[in-house]
Length: 424
Image (cartoon, rainbow, N blue to C red; front, side, top):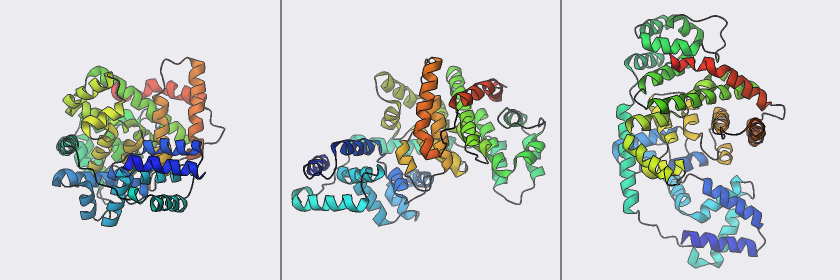
């Protein structure tokens, strides 16, 4: 019924000359980009902060109850908001209206007015029957909750990193004590110092001890850095070939993130580096702890399915969801959580999402750059870079003066030194 109602409404828009065919197609394309899961719709509507999706998911995994029930129980959403989201989730007509507004084709009042007029003229279309969940959907929901519980079980950081992160939760903690604790773990300290002394920090003098790093970085940066070093320690059970490609892509994304942040005059460009470095951590979690599911995802991709679609089919979510969920467990800054969650989302939806950190769009652009076809020749790569930059000029306010070729040269020039962070 929902699809038939939308088709009838589109015919009504055409017949009444309310919306041009080109605009209707734009709305339909935007409609297809929506993530219809309740949490993502709630974040898009501004009912919850994007990172709060993970809080609700954790409660859902522990309780086994529905997402909306958990959101209400946690007092993050109201019953009325949940009911509206459920309607938006299953009603194609309602989602088309939201897509039209997102594309700035009309206002919400106007499109709702047209919907009311259409439904008044076609009362048989006004009743929407709730579709019963299929056995496949029920089973996937069970498996998704099981995966979330498993992530919680395997999530603990290495002991030293966990202790340091806990200490950083205390604003009165003495920095000297943190340095002393870090010094007890030579492996973690060594990895952390490689990151501190790498090209991206650009320090004038080398930092030779954990205590000095603590003083140089400050509390917030230290938390991100300790987690970054801990990730490099924790996820060593993935195949070597995969790990190499993963970290090469992560380092390039990190450096691009910093370059874009510097161009925009953002004061914490090194924090953007960490966000970019860790944005794809969900891949490591799945590869190390969910090998059977990853094997099924690989089979589906080889059969022609899009990677994100394959992940949702097997896991009930994507590697981006897994990364955001894990970072929430680690109490990472919202910029890091959101960057992991949304680096594959439709750009137009992100631009219109409330409560979103500007870091997310930076990481989104950096990730898109690092996913460009590596077989492109120099001219084609330069042209593609410039075209991609055009998509982000308005959302990031990067202006016409951004020189993507110079940025690319700096990224590659620094890559070798940055790679020592993981090379030991």
